[in-house]
Length: 77
Image (cartoon, rainbow, N blue to C red):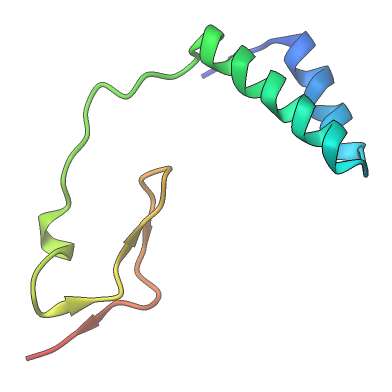
């Protein structure tokens, strides 16, 4: 998507290299605020995955990125 924010990149690098948890929390709070303000990605469509929500299907997981994890899916009956 070609999103670029050099100030954000610098904060990400600082947070990733810090071993101080309080400092990391502060940096990631700043990172989250910048990303929210910049709003580089907007979901315009969300599709319910009904085929993974049947009574005879268990173990299906949809990650926050909407990627399907079918590793532990099982069918019964």
